[in-house]
Length: 373
Image 1: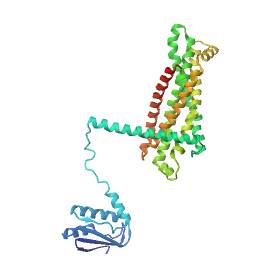
Image 2: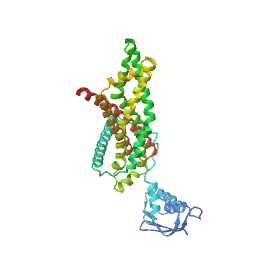
Image 3: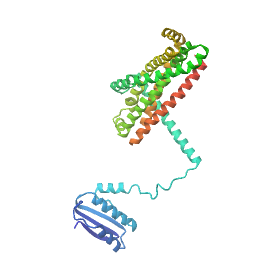
Image 4: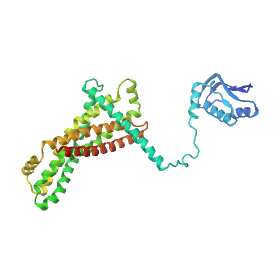
């Protein structure tokens, strides 16, 4: 007999399980237990004795769940202490989250004030996390300057290659097109006054002072910032970041610091390259449409651009490099535990990076205007 009953004694019904409880074996029917519970009226608790149980598979938890449901209907307490630990765990998992009836059809109606409050709390929480992340990144940078940061130099050089050389084709294309657009728009107006030569001034100052850095920053936000978020987000999903913390390695130093340094180093170089490509694009319009020669365009561009314009553009690019790196790494660290969260983190990193670039551009422009540079 694989199923025997003892009692009930003092309101306790003992169910003894023995032998092999596996699919394919000749197993007792749950109706035996049901009939026993219905025939005895003084049962207050059901207990189990599995000392003689040798092997079991999913057939045992299925039977136990049916017994648990019968006990719940008759308000009888089911004591699972005598069951194998694995069976107890399966029962706990199966009954941990009850199924909600009509959960999809019934929605919670939130008032306007409730929605505003929820979004405000979410914003404040995100702001707190962002400030804490920036503080940790700053501390990691201080450790880098003191030579105490723990990171792999190979990761830094690999990230520099990905942020620098591999980004040249897309930076070249976008910068040349931006220079073409600026020159073409300016040519329509300047040609009316016979001032075509000032196309060089327009394109040169715009690209060197702001547009080269801004366009490079936006490109890197969409290309590199999203990649950072996806890489770190995937590590978060795979619990690799938790493993680093367990080993006593700071994710800020090991993951964030190399990416931030790579972008800070490469953004000014990419900005200079973008400036040259934009001036080249403007020269194509000036020489091809306005009949200017190369020497005229070169001399006018050289006279129009000052070192202040160049330094302001490089400062823009360095700030954008920090913002893009922080946005990508922050969203990656905040990523959830599913594959869909990785995509959301990449999207959020791009949006955060571009918004940060626009806001920083406005602030730096106002500061330069106040300082008179």
